[in-house]
Image (cartoon, rainbow, N blue to C red; front, side, top):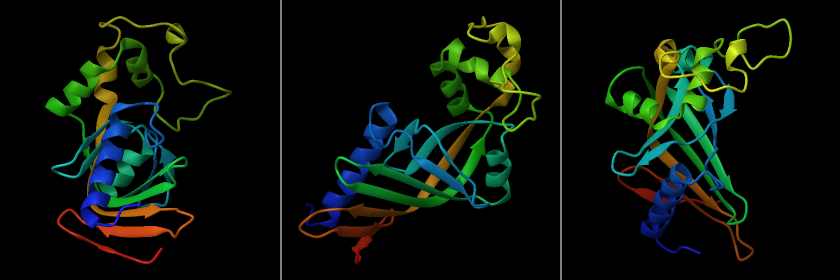
Amino acid sequence: MYDTLEKVRADLDARLEAAAGDRRSPMHTPVVATADADARVMVLRGFDRLSWTLRFHADARSPKVTAVEDDPRIAVVAYDKAAGVQLRLRGRGRIERAGTAVDAAWAESTNFARRFSLGAGPGAASEGPTSGLPQQFEGAEPDDGELLPARLNVALLLVKMEEADWFSLAHTGHRRALLTRDGGQWIAP
C-alpha cells in the first residue's frame, strides 16, 4: 500500500507505460468514453509521462473522431483486477490525421493490421455480418501498393490527461488519490 502521493504517481506512470508496451498488461485495453457518452474498448498504444498524454489509433472515419472534434472531453477507465487498482483518467482529446506521429504509427503496423483501414468505415450499414473488409482481403495480407488508399483513414487519438483518479482496493482499507499533472491530494474512497 502506498503512503505518499509520489509513490502513487510513480505507480500510475508505471502502469500506463506497461499498458502501452505490453499487450498482456491488464490495462492495455481500457474503456475510452467520449463526451457524447459513447464508450468503447481501445488499445493503449503509447503514454508520455512528461506531457501526460495517452495515444490510441483510430479510423479517421469513425464516429468517435467526429465526437472528439465536436467536444474534446475524454474519460478513460482501466482496471487491474489482480492488483485491485482502477484508474479513471480525464482529459482532452485531439485527433491527428497527418504528421510524424501518424506516419510512425502507420510504419509500426503490419500490412495485415493496416488492411482494416481499407474496409468500410466504422458503423457503415451492411446487408449481413461483415468484417467491413473488401472480399479480396478477408484473411489475406495486401501489399504496400494496395494499402495506399488506407493511409488516408488512419488517425491518432491523443488524450492530454488533466486528472487521474487512482483507486486501490485493499482488505486493510481502500486508498484513493486524485492527481493532476502538477499535484494531487488524497481523497476518501
